Length: 415
Image 1 (cartoon, rainbow, N blue to C red):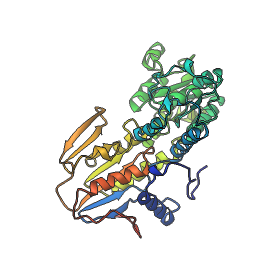
Image 2 (image 1 turned 60 degrees about the horizontal axis):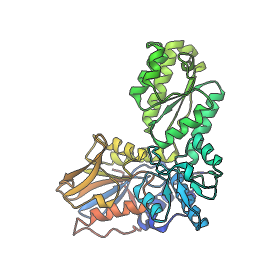
Image 3 (image 1 turned 180 degrees about the horizontal axis):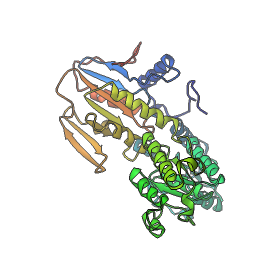
Image 4 (image 1 turned 90 degrees about the vertical axis):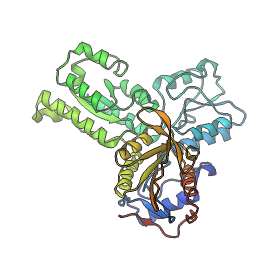
């Protein structure tokens, strides 16, 4: 599926691709096929210098999903085509599909937009990259629709389901590190809870609460209130807190998943003793997808190269993009934009505040200095063309800047 060679080339619309970004990625791969150099790529235009993350943008799962969606439209010109929810967390890509006639059955939060009862056996229903619940698969099949004909579930999400199933078969309860309202975590919880006891934790704070139950510090009755809607049917305390393994939503922050796994292991060690912890804790390998891990590692490499400000491009409900922003916060001013239209001028930019979940307008966002060094990254659901558009828009604010063009040679910013 994925190797150290060049990634599989998917058939996605030309409008999502970028000659500039595509060439940068190709040249970096040729120079560093083992992916060991996390230094960003530097494009020096004179008064403005862009440092671009080593890894960013469309991943395997996203390109696979887009290819499947467009193939479904091409192969079914005379049928109604639906998608269960957002194809990926990018408003531009979803809007493109709507313009082509695709209808969404649900919102990203699971709110029903079109009742399943209105579907007909001849309709086409695409399963998005996040996957969907076992219950929805069964509902569609009951209506005479085959949801696996155009199943765009990311292979790495399915890998998590498989890992959870293996843990359950070995007698472990499964802790899912994820946002329980996110489509992917809802799907993962649905598939895993069938195989064994499962509980969802969002962050270290919720994990510490779970650990207090593992250690027996809190009454078992309170567990069901504290984790309401986030534990599987029949979950029994303390029995189902005796042997545990951790998997995650594939777009979570890698270091947080590692810390959560360690917290669960330590709580089990306190309860049963360090010498017996191996019998109670499944030392699972991180179930983050390769793109999430690579993009987060590359973001750290980008920040290490230093800059004056950072711009991160991606959908505002994109989990993996938000974690890239979190890594940059506190290091320098960081602006989370969904596309180039949010960049109004050299003096004004609209962007998402992760903490308030609101778009804000910031003035004088570009430092009044030359050269100004701007760090750039993007989420896994962001097309390369959008990244190029952001770079081009910013470069246009510097009249004396050299033109942004495909470089004959690239320089990694090993500074």
